[in-house]
Structure formats: structure tokens, C-alpha cells
Amino acid sequence: MTTLAVWAPRASRVEAVVDGAPRPMKAADGGWWRAEVDAGAGCAYGFSLDGADPLPDPRSAWQPDGVHALGRLVDHGAFEWQTASWQGRELLGSVLYELHIGTFTEQGTFDAAIAHLGHLVELGVDFVEIMPVAAFPGRRNWGYDGVFPYAVQESYGGPDGMKRFVDACHGHGLGVLLDVVYNHLGPDGNVLAKYGPYFTDGHTTPWGDAINYSGADSDEVRRYFLDNAAMWLREYRLDGLRLDAVHAILDTSATHFLEELSAATAALSEQLGRPLTIFAESDLNDPRVIEPGWAGGYACDAQWNDDFHHALHAVLTGETFGYYEDFGSLTDVGAAFAHGFVYTGQRSRHRRRRHGRPLPASVSARQLLAYSQSHDQVGNRARGERLAALVSPALLKVAAALVLTSPFTPMLFMGEEWAASTPWQYFTDHDDVALVESIRTGRRREFESFGWLPEEIPDPQDPQTARGSVLDWAELDDPAHRDMLRWYRDLIALRRTNADLREGGFGGLDVAVDEVARVLTIARGSTVVVANLSPERRHLTTTARRVLLASAPATVAEDGVTVAGESVVILDGSDAGGDGLVD
Image 1 (cartoon, one colour):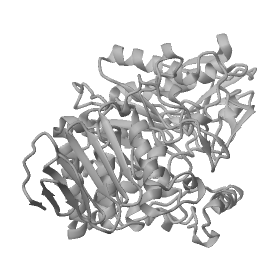
Image 2 (tube, rainbow, N blue to C red):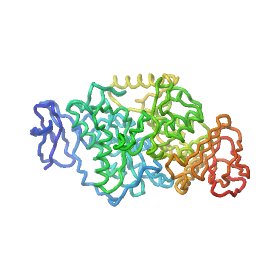
Image 3 (cartoon, rainbow, N blue to C red):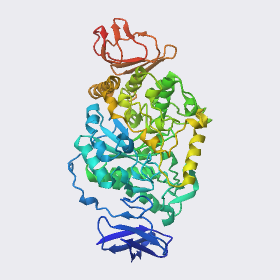
Image 4 (cartoon, rainbow, N blue to C red):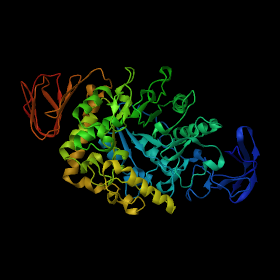
């Protein structure tokens, strides 16, 4: 027998519908309904509220026939794990690799992605961070339009496909992180509002009514997402969760949802005996996201740092429109290295108000993720151009070095390690004509402040938009792409073996900026990183003599080092000896 349960506090009668047959359910405390049914894995089921047509279970773990059909039961205990002894690994200071299952390979499945795990191991990354896999409408989507947070997208391989992927990653020594969306649900196939007060009109988000985290009957809504997080970590054996846009989780409770989630995850980590990580995307530059609970924080382990990206992107590309208008100087990049956030309370031109707050001394630099590219910063461009389409290969190497020698926790976006030429664009697969047109119109309006023309924006619904965003692994046969890949491998290997570069504190870091010469020098202990963003050769005085790694030939002499234009050199100052010309 199987126990079916659903929270439907507004219904006066609820029936479970299993393989087409209705079964009465009994009311329980708190608006819950329960029934014991003779059903097993694979049975189609849903719930009928007050005699209406049956709906999928809000906690459905499998939607093999799409988000508009009933779900099927899953027995999570039936999967035979091959890596049951996996002990996990610590996130902070590791190297992350963000990927989208649907475009990582031509097939767009978990099983196809497994074939490339060897590439990631050779690259030297520690974790894969997969973009959302919660069931969404159609076959193509970024994942942020998911409507069944407990179900794994069927076109990717469904629940067992994901478990095979996680199992294979652990077998390769790779941790697995999942991007989850707890700030909204997609509009197409979303049934939660029919079951209960999952949403509130008291707050709004860019995607519609906010999730009801602190209004009437919100306890069970919070429990819905807390249980979801626990499911991913327990049943799918994930090593951590990345929380999408937590600034849109609007909670006025005395204990914020993020703090409650962090505490629950810490308790589960202790129970399972392996490290589990919660890290967030936030647009607030607010240290509370990562400060401990005793200091009034939400106790997330880490957060994405868009300030670092924006400062680096603007100085590399010269783009200073849209939200990049707040950046553009090499001094901004230096500030990001020295302080984590660039905006720590000063006025933001883009926001037309003060923005951010300084990080307290108790926060480690490793609690911030640094990246030169991400799904947002590539995909939310009109044409989805990667950085490789905007700057020279030489400057790409400089960007990679600044990320991978930073005191932060570095993250790469799939394909950047070989300067992939394929764009990564926004794509959907909706059936609702009005919704499709709304998305098209919204994308055009969003890009007005960037000066991008409407005709430059690919149609999200065109299947070619998604197909054109698939990585071309054949590029690895090209010498130029192989050269970039070698550079990334060398940088990661150096980071792994160099004690200075593994250090995650701000205290041992010294930053010098020359705006006129366009040179950034970062001393991390005895290791010195010199980045020359100008096209001209530059000579710098430094006591560091031994070149550890250079993107172009650098000449060291008694009075310092000469660095080629658009290049970076990493020096060791613990040994005053030099070795002349270094390739």
C-alpha cells in the first residue's frame, strides 16, 4: 500500500485518482488530505478537488507525459547507487563548472552529459552546477519556468537519468550542485494556486505574484520548499543547492526562509554525515545572505558576486550601458578584489540610489563566487554572445587568470574553457500563443536600456534558437580552442598547488591599479599576478622574479618584469632568482 497526501486547505472534498479510478481521501490536521491506496511505482495519479477534473500532485516527482498531464509514482529507494560511499567535498575554494543539461550536448540528456565528465576531470574542476531541471513545459527551456519543483524534466532523462548522472559524477570525484528556483514558478502548467495559498498578491516579483512565505497559511508553503530542498539532497544525493534570485524571496517573518533553509540543511548534513552547501544568487550586495545566524544573517554558505563580473566585463569590453553603466574602470576591478563588492553603500547610477553594504571581517572571500561568464550574463544579451565573441583571445586569457587566481570561489560557464564560439541564447517551448507573444515583447523591452535593437533578439520559440546554443565539442580539435583549454588547465592546476592562491582571506591581498597604463597588480602572499589590459608592453618594478605562468612571453630582470600587451603573468616572489624570457 502507498500513502498519498496532499495539502488542499480550501477544498471540502478531495479524491485521489489512481490509474483513472477515484479513491476518497480523509481530511487531516492543517488542511492535509490522506489516503492509503494499492498503487506502486509507475502508476498515474492526481487529485480531484471538490469533484473537478484531477490535477497533478504539487509534489509529483515524475511528469513523463508533460506538465499538463497527471504524474506517476516514483520509488526513490529502487535506484541502485554505485557510489553509496561518497563522502562529499567542501565547496568553498573549489572550482565550479556551470552547465545546462539541454545544451551541454547535442542529445541534451543526463546520459549524454556523462560521456563528457572525463573532460571536466582533466580540466580540474571540483563541482558541476547544473541549471534547473524541475519539470517545465515542452522540451526546451533554461529551467526557470519550472512548474513542478519535485519532478525532473523528462526530456533530460527523468528521475533515474538524473540519478545516473549524479552517480557518475561522484564516481569521477565531482560534486554535484543544483540550481533551484524558490522565488517563483513558471506560468505554463502551474497548478499550485488551485490547491492552496501558495502565492500572495501582497508582493510582486518580475514573474508575477510572489510566493507566500510569510502571509496567512504560509507555514505549509515554507514546508513545501524546505521539503523540496531535502529531497534533492537526500534522494538524489546532491552536494548542494544554488538558490536563484533570493532577493525575490519576499519574507517578513522573524526567521527568514533562507535562515530556516540553511539551518535545516546543516541538520541534514550532520544526519547524512557529508557536507551540504546552500549558496545564493542575490542582487542586493547584502552580507546578511552569508553572515551567520548569530550575527543576524541568513547563514547561506556562499553567494554569487555579480559586482566582480560586471567590473571585469566592463573593463574588458568597454560596455558601459544598462547595468554596466555603474562600472568601467580598472579601479572597480581592484575594488572587487580588495573588498568583494564594488558597491558597498555608495550611489549607483543605474539604480539611482545607494546600493550595497560592506562585508564584515568575519566573511571569507571564498564565500563569494567569481566568474567572467555565467548563464545570465551570456544568455541575457540580445544575441547571447559569449565573452569570446567580444574580446580578443589574449584578453580572454587575462579574464580567466583573474577569476582563477582570485581569493574567491571561481566558477566557469560551460564551454568557456575552450572559448566556445557557439552563442547561448534564451529559448522556450510554450504552446500558449498569448504567453509566447508576452515573452517576446518582454525581451525586447528588457533590452531597451542596452541599446539593442528588437530585430537583433532571436525568437525564443524558434527551435533553432536552442539548437544554435548547443556546445560544439568538435571545436576541441581546433588548435586555437585547444590552446585556450590548455591555459585553463594550467591555471586550475596552479591554483590547486599554490598555497597563496588557495588562501581565501582578504587580509593577505594587496591590489595596485594603474588606470593610465591599464595594469592591475594583485599580490597574494608571495604570489603576484600582473594583468596588462593595454595593447602595449609594460614594464613593472617588482621583487618577484620567478614566472609561474604567463599567457605571453614575459621578460624578468633585476628591476622587475616586462609584460606583453593584453597578457597576464603570475610571479613567485619567494625566490629572487629570475630565468629571463619565459614562454
